Length: 253
Ligand code: G
Ligand code: G
Ligand code: NA
Ligand code: MN
Image 1 (cartoon, rainbow, N blue to C red):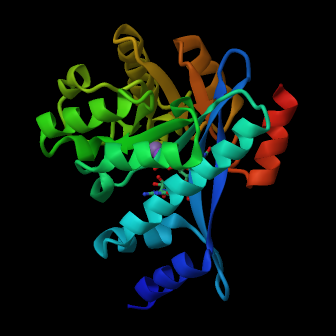
Image 2: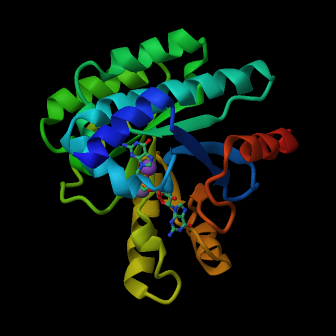
Image 3: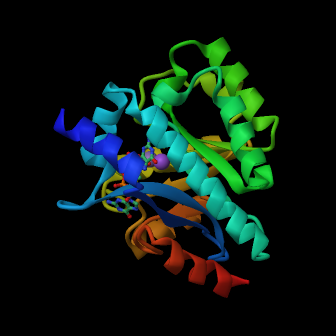
């Protein structure tokens, strides 16, 4: 297919690039991390969003090569920041379901070793849906990852169908409240109730909790009052290119 061959070419010609969206401490405003978000600089069509190509990449298994490129690029960038003397912050990489296999921990380990970065630089964002297949297998893979010192965040939290019982079993550091629940705050009482409940549960289970898609002051104030730890969203910053993000973290020191 057209898109498939385009993505193969994009890998060969290095047309993908990463943006970094800050994750910010809700109390201090300090940048604690960044989510790496892929974009495709298409030679004819301009910048293409992952919404347009990730699902096709998943169908064709090209996602394995793309996500390997993302992990490698994020680690290479971490090495640059580490060598520049910047205090470690977490670079979060999205893991697609196809990639979440027995070999993931080993691939992560090799990427850290290849780039000689401390594991504290890396976080993986996994979605609820990939935890549902085989709980024991999933716990094993996760534990092998966290044993290295790499953190795990549960992305799009609240949008899956799974029972809450897995939360007890899985070695997850952070719950990431899906932005669909943040959107309606403060007017939509259901969104307010769901967001508060997730924050409260996360805190009692000693997880960190981050809200994504925070766009305005009202959402920020509500989340702060409820005890949310971190925010990510257009209110603080859009996803930034690497130079702009570097300036931001350099200033914070
Ligand atoms: O950045 P943006 O909002 O356009 O991302 C759209 C979707 O693409 C989101 O669901 C996001 O998780 C996903 N996405 C962004 N970057 C990556 C990536 O590097 N790998 C994978 N698997 N998904 C990504
Ligand atoms: O699926 P995932 O949670 O990884 O998706 C992250 C997506 O959310 C990215 O495509 C990113 O560009 C987008 N995003 C980040 N901040 C905001 C925001 O404040 N509002 C909206 N609508 N989207 C956001
Ligand atoms: Na994500
Ligand atoms: Mn999400």
